[in-house]
Image 1 (cartoon, rainbow, N blue to C red):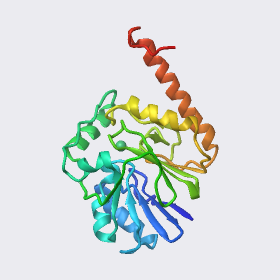
Image 2 (image 1 turned 180 degrees about the vertical axis):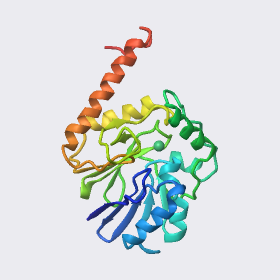
Image 3 (image 1 turned 180 degrees about the horizontal axis):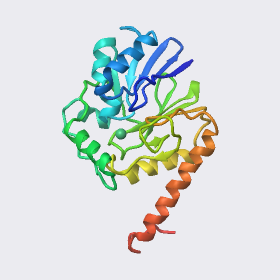
Image 4 (image 1 turned 45 degrees about the horizontal axis):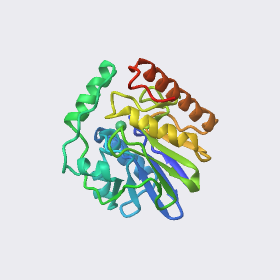
Length: 251
Ligand SMILES: [Zn+2]
């Protein structure tokens, strides 16, 4: 088993996971970084025909922007959740991001995403929570996108969390700081947060947190993820305090 962060790609994390003769690229990076991805894959010794699949945590362009290119160059299938497949394949328009609470630069990125969503043929989909294949569990985190997921790879005890759990406050790998999905970049952040919270309540052993942004997290993973839960619970109770009593959750 070998897990490699293709760190020449700067804006988002692209992972190469090799296990029992299978090679997966998890998330694909933004199209603007394609030359960097190309070089990183070549350096990692990946050649056409070598990849089992490119698996996407969700369809946003920084994660899915090179899916079509990888599919064509390396002759491998593109796989994502069924609820993202229709937008990714161009059969449906991309719903606009909420942009709620987004800082100015984030707002610009959201507008860019709305105008230039990633497009790629999709060869296979997953649509259920739980055990999938190749050792992966699917954890739907709908709400970031309609089909956003986390992928837990049991043989390596790695959690690929996409944008449902971030490992940095910014798109940088030098600063570690775990946090849940950002509201501005999501469709329904509360739904995504609820899914993450439910997963973390009974999370398995995790050796490596491989988030969509931020550094790989290998030390104290459980404690840090419990910290994310604490943030989520604080946010939920703050929300319920601001709701009129008829909308507040029952005790
Ligand atoms: Zn995203």
